[in-house]
Length: 90
Ligand SMILES: [Zn+2]
Image 1 (tube, rainbow, N blue to C red):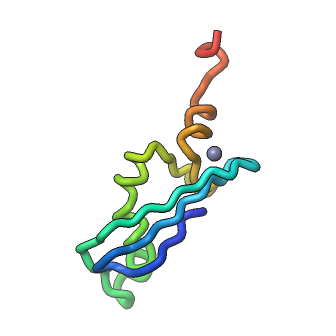
Image 2: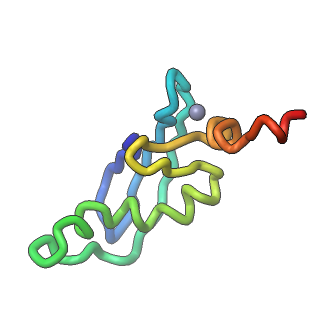
Image 3: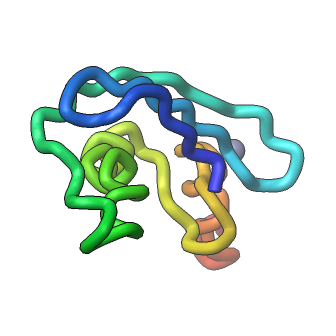
């Protein structure tokens, strides 16, 4: 998963997003101010870890990037290419 964060909520967090498709070198960096603090580490460890990434999801969607599950992230160009079907190109 090529989404890395620098900083922790609540407060400004810098996100670095890189495309994971083949040798595509597309990447982007953006900053979000996340007001909501993460859940407690003891009671929700995964939620604690992924808090910033979850908060950024709508913004990532808005940029046109797509989360490809375990395969990481696709930049808008690669996401469009993988959606294209042979019938659409005729
Ligand atoms: Zn790409």
